Image (cartoon, rainbow, N blue to C red):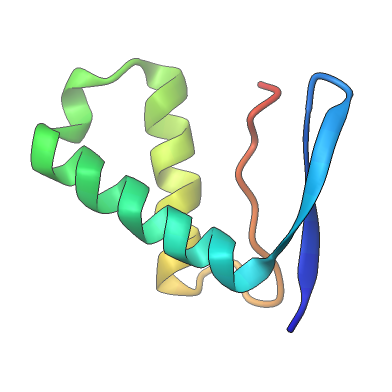
Length: 68
């Protein structure tokens, strides 16, 4: 299983990429239940990244940009 490093403000941790996909699925479902359009543009960008992770559009990689 591939692992990835999550960094935020010069700190980070290692996590299996499959867990990022699970986190992405949960985040997308939660946003869709509440309504994606009510969130700020930054949260909508994170939603789109998670959506791409879940749908497999980022083949060979997963990403969630928290520093932006």
